[in-house]
Image (cartoon, rainbow, N blue to C red; front, side, top):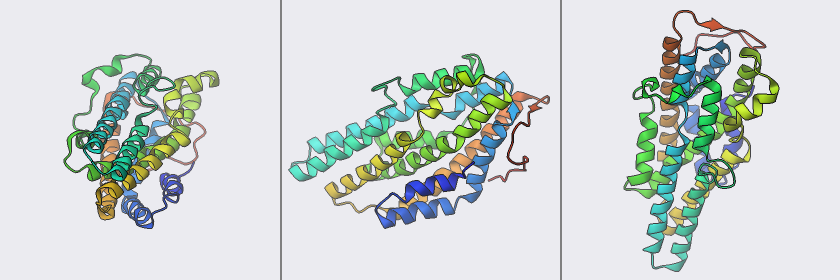
Length: 290
């Protein structure tokens, strides 16, 4: 299994701007504890035959692609509005192109050319839990993802559009890393722990597999180019120091999120948790905490 940092390093290397590469590397270098917690969560998830309640906790809190897509669409709309108000044709073109590139992040999420990703997530969660009870608010871990709600709100209504684009860049890099890292663990859990047939793997995990390869990688590249176009149009210099901070803060928040999620899943599982050790690569170790 590849480590999270190894996965994102290959993407960061594709960024042409040296200052941006440095900021992203520094953000990840400051976040080794958080990355260990994130990796540990998926490793532990893949080892256990979780109860229905525990799986419902996971499904309710893990992802909400419809909400994220709406915030990226809002950001694209705001850039379109700014472009229409810009009299300089060259600058207007750059802003229109920036909006287009930000909109590309939500292309698949909105169902263009396929199934919208909110529906796909619900199908994934239903198969994971064996029920749609996971949609109940009682399974929500209160406050666990406030950091993502804040980012979504800033894309929709934050004053500084450059900042709104910048905070989106490490999010898309993280998404690429997490889906790539987690996919083999979901596959192992599906086959070796709950014993479902290989024939159902692609259908059950379609939400995960649809985010692999060029999908999330392309989103990250689109945000990088969208930021460059916006800065060239407005004369606003990219704040690479802020990008470094946003990266490390995002990873710290995800580390805290997975601590809270794992605790909530274990509580939902109760005292009779069943551990299944099957085809594991290493013994389970005590994970660090933030």
